[in-house]
Amino acid sequence: MNLAEYQPKFPFTQRHLLTLQDWSEDDICQCLSLALRLKAMQKRGEAQTCLSGKTLAMIFAKSSTRTRVSFEVGATQLGGSALFLSTSDIQLGRGEPISDTAQVLSRMVDGIMIRTFRQSDLEELAKYGSIPVINGLTDEFHPCQVLADLLTIYEKKGTLKGLKLAFVGDGNNMAHSLMIGCSKLGIDVAIASPDGYKPNPTYTAWAVANAAAQGSRVTVCTDPLEACEGADVLYTDVWASMGQEGEAEKRRKAFGGVYQINAACLAVAKKDAIFLHCLPAHRGEEVTAEVIDGPHSVIFDEAENRLHAQKAVMALLMGGGQTQKNA
Image (cartoon, rainbow, N blue to C red; front, side, top):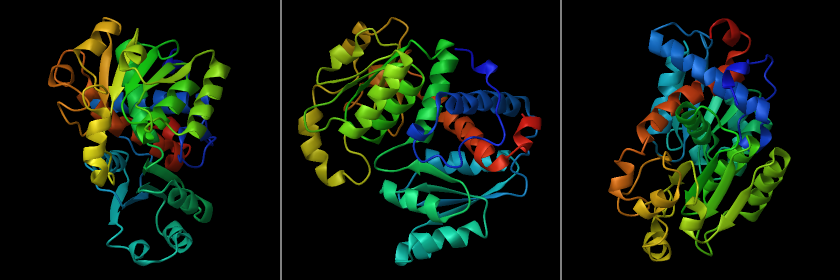
């Protein structure tokens, strides 16, 4: 797979990014290809102006480091601006219908990024608004992170199709989005989770169907070493996500001592396997320090790529045809 062969097409097929299940293989590859070009332009110090005069509203019901910084800096680098809105500051947090918020913001800004709990809130914004809506994270999906992950894998491996990614841990929003994004591009995915914490069966079925169309495989098991066998990419996430703090001790008992990326996982993976983590990470829990701080880890390249991947998303959804002549 050569991402240089993909060119962004306008008008872009998609209006929103709610989940990567809505995007085709071509949509995803257009986005990744554009991200590579925007990254190269930024490194060369070239101006990027496709969001000139445009504003992204950023709604945060969940706190963030990488999401806020990458979207705000990305919008600025593309010549636009970003407006931070916490749910404690706007009427959405005080009982205003989401449909009203969507229609009001549609009159004032050019796109909405929301980081929240319920996927249904995101979908309601998209239904009632007339501007693009971007999923900055929900309890169900984290598509922008997976675009950054795919970008990182491509940079390190030079291809995507035919690789294998192993995810060890909670079958959460990251597991869902990795299964979907990887299966759309022909990457084998193996998820190892304890019973009671496996990925949502509906989303697993989506990924299995995607993989069947690509000739790849999606498997869900309980044995981390089985999942990591022959993997090109090893991935994990925290055992208790935001909003699950009350379950932290219960989850430590369910995951502890088994569901961790460690030297044993590296030993059964490919020799040149890379390690990814969406961060923040808890060393000694879901990953050992020797792995996350070792030579296989590319977590900071991955973190930086949130910026470049999300710039591509904004450019495609909000920038229109200007993107072509400025990238």
